[in-house]
Image (tube, rainbow, N blue to C red; front, side):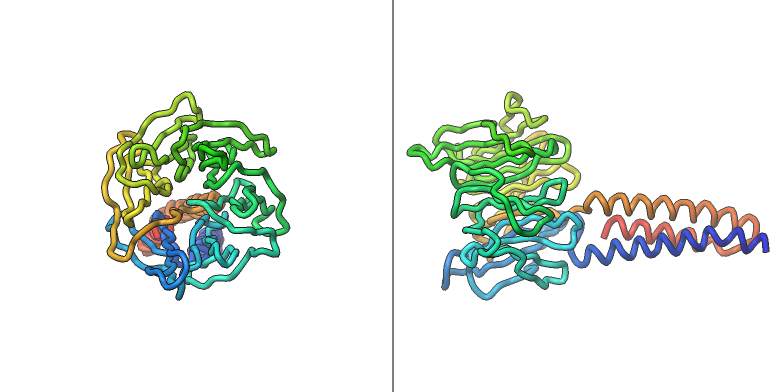
Length: 352
C-alpha cells in the first residue's frame, strides 16, 4: 500500500500535465509558432491576385496560402488575439474586421454598426496588454478602442491622417503615418494609456510606412526616405534613433519582429519578405513568390504570455514526474521509458 501511495502524486501529475499540454496544443489549432503570416490584397475586381493570407516558414522560406478569398476587398490589418486562438484582419471595402481561426474558418466580429469607417493602415490593428483591441479608423481619422476586443468602442484618440499603429513594450501606443496638411508630413506619435498624445519623431515630407515594437523596448519605424529607410529607437527613446537600414529599394513596407528579437521582417512592394538583422542591419531574402505583389500587413505567431506560463507549469510538473520516475526505477525496477516519453511530449509542446 505504501508503494501505491507513492505512485499517486506521480499519476496525478502526469494526468494534470497531459491535460495542460493537450489544452494548450488544442488552443493553438493550426497556427505555427514563429511562422510569419501576411495579408496580400488587390483593390477592386477584377484585379489579381485576389485577397489572400499567406503563411511563411522563415526557416525554409516555404510559402503556403493559408486562406484565399474569391475577390478583392482590401484585405489588411493583422493582429493575433491575446489567447492565440484567432488572427484578426480587416477587409476595408466591406468595412469589416474578421477573426480567422487556425483551421481557416472565420467570422465577422466588428463592422459598421460597431463604429468602423474604413479600417486601414499597414498593420492598422493592435492589442494592448489588457486585451483591449485598437483599430486605425481611416474614415474618421481616429483610433478606436474596443474594450476586451469587442464593442461598443470608444474613440481613443483622433489621428492627424492615414497611418499604422503598434504597441511598444512600455504599453504606449504608437501611430505612424502622415498628416493631412499641405505637406503630408511624416510623423510618429506616442499615445499614453490615458490618451495623452505627444510627438515622438518627424520626417519632413517623407511618409511613415509602418512601425512595430519588440518586447524589450525597441521601436522600429520604416519611412519612404531614400527608397526605404528603417530606424531603430532603443528604449523607445527618440534621442537614441539609429539608422538600421537605408536604400531598401522599396517605397512600401510593413514590419514585424521575430520571436527571438534578432530579425525584423519587412514585407515590401514587389512581394518580397526580407529579414533584417536587428543589430547590424544586414538583410536577406526570407521568401518571395510569383503570386506576391504587395504585403499589406505582417503578424508573427508566438505563444501568448498565459500559454507560456502554462507551458512552464506543465514543464515543471513533467520534470517532477521524471525525477519521481527515476526514484521509482530504483525502488521498484519499473520501466524507465515513461520519463523519456514525458520529455519528448514536453519538447513537442514547446516547438509545434
